[in-house]
Image (cartoon, rainbow, N blue to C red; front, top):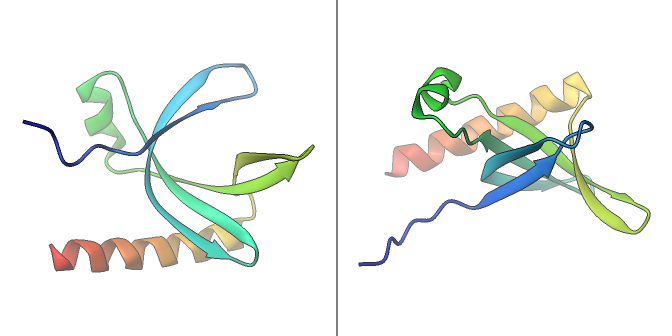
Length: 96
């Protein structure tokens, strides 16, 4: 039997060349950028439980002709995007 739900995973490399895996839980387009809500994926179930649904907001940027993801550092923009994402999460979970 095939699992119909498979998470959309992405691996990002930080400034110290350490890999981090995230699940893409949502994306939105705003002001010519694409923003992603990324949920960290941990190797151990206990770490996953301790994270308590904490997610990060990343945006696409183009650098040297290559599209990269970078964490949103503008606090006001991050708050605005978090509000949008969280209202979308509420709609999604209300439907289910």
